[in-house]
Amino acid sequence: LAKTTQPISMDSYEGQEVNITCSHNNIATNDYITWYQQFPSQGPRFIIQGYKTKVTNEVASLFIPADRKSSTLSLPRVSLSDTAVYYCLVGDQLNTGGFKTIFGAGTRLFVKA
Amino acid sequence: DTAVSQTPKYLVTQMGNDKSIKCEQNLGHDTMYWYKQDSKKFLKIMFSYNNKELIINETVPNRFSPKSPDKAHLNLHINSLELGDSAVYFCASSRDRRTNEKLFFGSGTQLSVL
Image: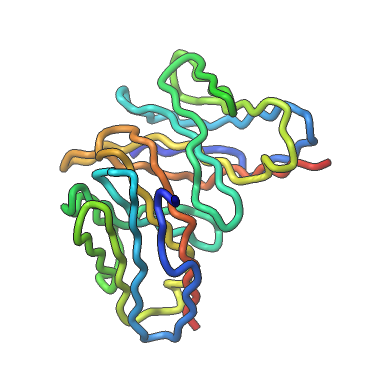
């Protein structure tokens, strides 16, 4: 069962770049790495997904080294509204077919003015 | 239009009661899920249905029974509610059951059992 480990919490200031690293030592060959963001009283929301090297979208960048045992979510110039919990996910292939997404404990990012 | 909608948003009830939470998605997705988020914010999968067929059934008390009348709906019925059932329950959907499909979540149902 692939599991993830990420820092419990992080603090930052507005305008700074924030990097959240996740380790997933047992990631399977066909697993992607996915990050979700969750605000209070809302469901998680997809941010970014990647398999290897670097992926960038309008919200974030995701860096994945060659061994894929870790990944880093990079949020450029955070604002107060980026205060949220960030989850790093890898998957778990089911014996019966299909796929199960496993959420870790998440990283609570608090952005200060 | 809300992509994944669940009702009610808040549910306060007494121990021993039976309650249901409803979920509907208008994304045309084949796969739907129920997740439970406890007070420590751990998000755990409970059930998953693909085209009305149960494909994931985690170690959940059999007081919890999901029902999928069609692929756009996945309801959760809970019998004999206990204090430990208090949590936020999230419904989610994905395009299909294949690896790494993006999940779309509802806004959650906060269940408080007194």
